[in-house]
Amino acid sequence: MDRSLFTLLGSGLLGISALGFACSSPGSQPQPGKPESDWRLLEPITYENLTVFPVVSSSGYDTSAFLTLEEGLSRGEVTVREQGAETLIRNRGNGRAIPPGYSGPSVNQLVLINHSKRPLLLLAGELVSGGKQDRIIAKDRIVAPFGDPLPLDVFCVEHGRWSAGSEFNEAKTIVHPSVRENAAINQKQTDVWAAVAAGSNVSSRMASPSAAPRVSSADINATVTTEAQTQSYTKIYESRLVGGSVDTVVAEMQRRFRRETSGLKGERVVGVVVAYGGEVAWSDIFASSELFDAYWNKLLRSYAVEAVARPSLREKASVDDAREFLRRLDGHEKTESEPGVYRWRETSEGGLSQIELDALQPKLMTLHRLVVRRTS
View (tube, rainbow, N blue to C red):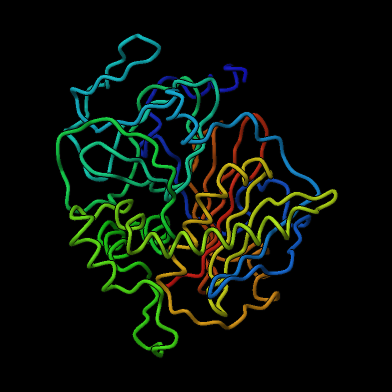
């Protein structure tokens, strides 16, 4: 990508202090095209209490210019480290020191640098492993290429560890919807920890024994005691007791998903709408099938984690309810922006929240759109 597209960014930090922030009514911000007019729902794919409605489109944007976090970390094109004045980030062999003003390590802020020629896409809920404790990205955003070190807002998902370590690796994980909701919508660290420990924001206390979740709170507590003493998200949900149930759901849903989407003609899958029992609860839709494919395996596992922790109700979600997650919400809107790089928008209507991440370069497009039925 032509670096000149980003010259207006300057060389300053791209943190919260540099963001434009506003609360506005719908329509006060310029809107990208409306790709939802080309979206179509396929028939639902169900296994136990998890239902996925594939969202397909006959068109899409070219998103090859964008780098994902997993790709960037694995190739060494992105560095994530603990905050600290002593931190030194290496960029192609040249030391680049963190600018003055940084304090010591912080639970809710890390330091990130994008060494790549490509803008970096970050999604709320993506997990980075290492440092003093594992963290997740707090909000969707884009980081310009060739940037200076920037403060990155995060939430901790390893409550019981604060030990030596500075650098982070990719974990190939996106946390499940209850944790993502508390990060992206509620934005409270205590709520994030509670969702990690409980498995779901949805109580199963009123469910009959026949509808008990595959994985109960007691199972998660037992796992913390035996296999995940630091309350590490990864260790809990990949453990023998919990991970086995998740693996079963993932394998069966993956098989059914491939079967139902393999024969598409002139259309590609760009996202999914997700239901648990009879309740449509979540959607993730991308600007291209390539971006969807890059995230699909991690997303499916996150949906499966949520499913095994919710009551195992077998009611079927309706197509009409799922279609509600494709329309543009009409309600109170908040926006944040980084000029020339991205715009983040959250719209709330009734019990639904919609978050859209717009790329402003090299072409205006909505890279990711999330709709969640809030549980709190």
